[in-house]
Length: 138
Image 1: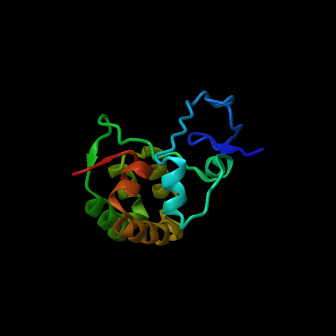
Image 2: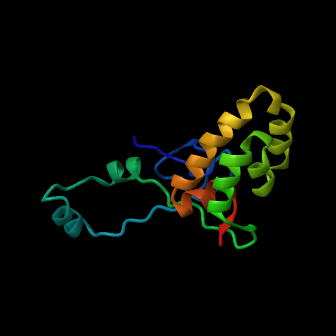
Image 3: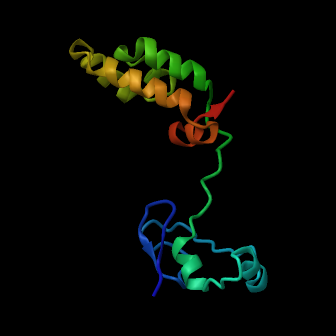
């Protein structure tokens, strides 16, 4: 019996279920190719539907137009240069984390974490940055 996981909460979803029993997320399963074209695309190997369901991952959540518009480069540079004070967290709207950075700034740990986060911000893809930080790119 194959199971997939819920894209919202990660719970196991049975093959016939259309909704997550834990969070209520609707599960959509689509097969874009017919059996004949799937067999041709995979070098003549026929893949059973339960195997396709097992490894199917739902597309990423859409970017919400109500999210604030922020710059990935600005967030990255703020994290690198002023990350010890949590300025990048305030910029991205994560006020609680920004206050936590200020409280522990005397340990220099937030400065190190801010440097790493700045590098991650600058090297991540636009879509990944937007989804992770709930912002839209300028």
